[in-house]
Image 1 (cartoon, rainbow, N blue to C red):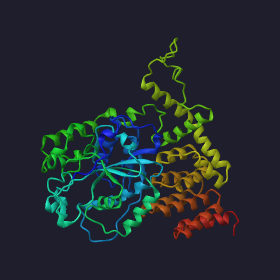
Image 2 (cartoon, rainbow, N blue to C red):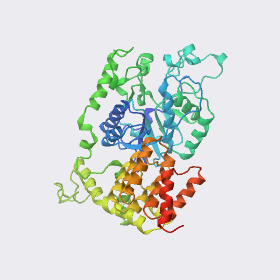
Image 3 (cartoon, one colour):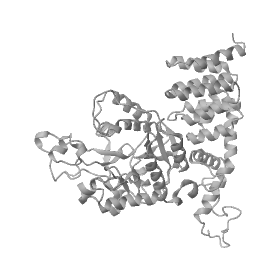
Image 4 (cartoon, rainbow, N blue to C red):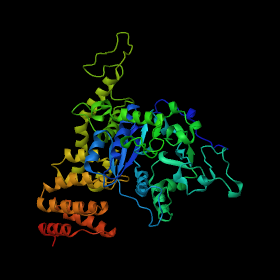
Length: 528
């Protein structure tokens, strides 16, 4: 019997239901300095082409170079650095050697600033709007069923007897083998709800689970087997379906294509591998390149032409600020009245008979861009007023009430805006690093160091930064070292000592240079 699939007909193909936009996002994963960044750029442009309402978050490992991060940010992506996750030590032979690094994808369950996310592999392209998937019922993980017919499945009983869940009635599961295996999804695309509790359960389960050939995909299938619900193949067309199960593919209805077959990555395509000379494969590779090469889809040209336009990480908290202002003034709509022109230069004032003239979408975009830019300075002024005038606990509470959607871009913007107020910048950096689901990146670490180094003892600070560049990256240790040294050099040794106490409680310690700076600050302030 074929499995029950959440019917595409139950989901409108139009825009998703109204929601607070920043609470939803697409997310992908990137590791290393290879050419997969091209796939992510293509994905970002594809989402823009289909007019998705939601941003693309890119979870990057520390080994992703700064140049690749810059390219992604220029394409409107929200770059989030994550720490690697490794399975228990074992002798498992993965189906592909690089699969082991994919366990780091589990970190995306920490992104709790978003209520729901759609994960997409970097070798995926979106050819039709799928925002409506965000409206699927909560409490389930939604994904497309995989196919067992490829040779990479040769280690499984499914492959050996010719059984596939894509056509379960063609070769039935033998009764002598017991119940058929649970439905199994391809983890290149899935709809999920971030949760710190789920993340902790994932990590604790991973520590006691023997890794298997398909790495994190096997693990996710095992972990979510009770809440997994299949969705149609059009939301993740694995290319092998074209020759393994053509009867299940209606290519003109496919919304998402997964270029995961050997030799099918468009940016590496040569046509020499098996099945890569098929006309449908050539057509899909051509479609991918058309999007990748379309300069009109570049973020800077299509969305942010104005010099003063805001990056996505800054836009999100300002949306909240706009909503707060509307509430405070008793308005329940956007910050303009539909019965008035959108701006002084608007060519469409209200008609004499009271009817509303047609308003071009570009005018609305322009109006909101101007509104957000005008609110940027007062918003940052509010942040620094809180940091400058309130004690730590009160400041933490006040900042939390701003509902900031923390991102690398937002942190850099705040630090750049207030860089002359070193102590307030350090307090903001400290506060941000303690918020659930957010981790500082190498770039934000370097930004706060640059600010601190100009305050006092520049040579010591730069020496410390260079020392860290030579060592393996440990997020928690570096974070605390920066706070201790930062508070010490700006004349707050008592706060530095408090942070050091937290370090010792957590079982981590300062390095030799940080000790030197801390002790000197005690002497400078007559604490000995």
